[in-house]
Image (cartoon, rainbow, N blue to C red):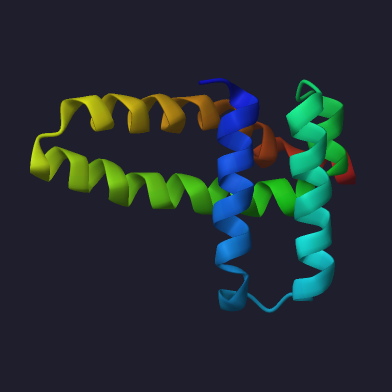
Length: 108
């Protein structure tokens, strides 16, 4: 499992929950599709994350919240294999959360 595949999973989950947000669903789905296409063929970079911050910050944040629930369920069912995979995905996303916290400074 690599960062790009986890980010693609985050974008997929985000796109499934767009109805919960006040966004232009068509435009957001198009942006998500472009991000997924990029990540399928290119390594993720800090500059790319900055350019796609408005989509990626929501996707990563929402996916981490989703993973917390899944981790809780895996603990309850004592499914250690699934738990290890979920924790690894959660850990992969941690640097991006830290990066997004610094982005308001980059934008100003």
